[in-house]
Image (cartoon, rainbow, N blue to C red):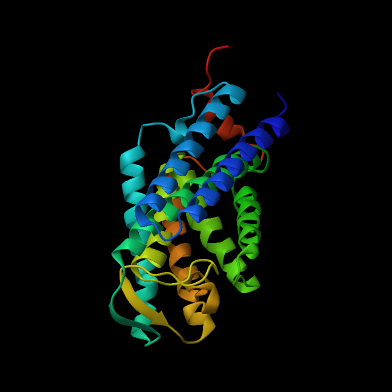
Amino acid sequence: MKVIGKTVLQLVAVVVISALGGQALAAVQGKPWLMLAAGLLTAAAAVAAYAGLVRLTEKRRVDEVGRTGLVGGLSLGTVLGVAVFALVVVNIWFLGYYHVNGPGQVGGAVGLFGFMAAAAVTEELMFRGVLFRVIERRTGTWLAMLLTGLLFGAYHLANPDASVWGALAIVVEAGSMLTAAYVATRRLWVPIGLHFGWNFAAAAIFSTEVSGNGSNHGLLDATMSGPSLVTGGSFGPEGSLYSVVFCLLTAVVFLWVAHRRGRIVPMGGQRLARLEAATTLPR
């Protein structure tokens, strides 16, 4: 099967599962435990479909979503994602633009857990698992990071309160931090955890907007107002300069690790071919 055909098949499978999962989540909106179940099922189905199709079409072990590193990678990524977002909010709070009014809704946080799990898994499979991995083979790490970052930012322009600045901020944040986490580990678990931890912290802990998708009701009853470059405005803190800075700093650490491990792929992808050679299945 041609490379384009394989890529399209893998991408379409994840997109279809993401769409079906989105419909299921919408159908149980307001029912936290059903949202949790629907989100987790969507995430599991997407990983299973991706792994099955990659193994079938590329004739190799799908180590990027293998059991090795699953618990550790997800845990590390989630803790780091929550911590980085917390740094953003603490700095905004220090300037007086984030206000906590009291406790929020536990039920809201439960439902958002499922919603954000589905979003993090399906988006990482699409943008890092399929698109970045395929583009990197032909362009090398740096150009693939830029191209998939631009695609990821454009993808978020469809959100209700999206802005050009917010999308550009996501190009830098996700295009650098999430992709660098994948390059450093050559596994999807850390970037999935990072993505989930960031989104869960934003929506289910600090009750802020996420990528222009409107306000959320999480564990804290909180409000945010102030200059858009600081707070991100209606797009949410992802549009804050603090987010850009902290995500870039995190990306630098991951890229340093990737460099030390010899996982930066030059243009032409020869090194990636060697990295993947050991995972090819016998025909």
